[in-house]
Image (cartoon, rainbow, N blue to C red; front, top):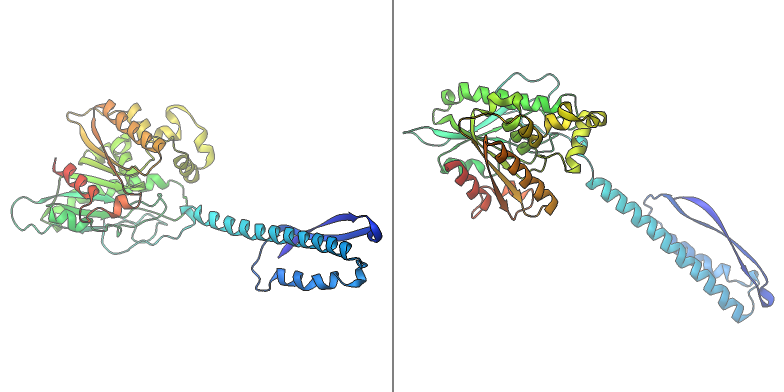
Length: 375
């Protein structure tokens, strides 16, 4: 235990006990380290020596007063030591909970089919996808649902499909789960790399899916994303840069993200982490928020379409009301554009459960997704 010494002077006057007691309180916590040896035991051992006749406390009343003073000092010291320990423990726990995605390692699966060359420096497997084909052997091929995983744009993997493949295949759909570049830390051009990956994967699927999996087709294809994956799917739907990619999909399903409007502090913090704080200070049409916030994009560059694209926005009712309100405002922005037909789908699961519940028996999320796909 490391302490910053403080000297406290206490005067006791009266009777034969006129005098001063000088003590050092070494209880200003600078850094707390674990020790197996008990501090309180040492203090208790020291009390008899302090109360010996050498201290001059011979009268019973004075001796009791002196004992009470020492006991009060001991209790104060114990309280301060405990507070230091609790503060240190709490600090470690909070820091652990606040550990950013940028500090967590990535674990990218390398199996599957490569849809493009690997971006230099990206983890191996970042350019791969998995195909879960329906078992249909005759009739029309199954339409395809493309899944974009979450992970705060910094981590995650295409393996996080849960029970989705079985649910989709049983109901006449193929499922494709794709990887995109994640580094576990911010890198220059991160979102551009990820959006480019989604575009490349879409182009590859259009040209190759029906050849290698004849039971699957990209006709009437849909894209679904969870969390950060929903944000990337929303960018695909709304950004003029990726309009050709968006035209491949008849439906978008955005599962429980709150990065659509740019008004949530965590979203702004994430963009600042990725692009740098200075990039957040711009304003107007050339600002970072105008370029990478779906709600801003749809307001400034509403596409002209002969028929609207269906967008189902799923969200957890466990979110704070302010976040739910922002999600609803994004749906309103999409409907104001008239190039989109946006609907809301609220569910009682927490953020993780919004994804893991898909495919589970009685799941409202799975039922909502199937209903949207079959409309």
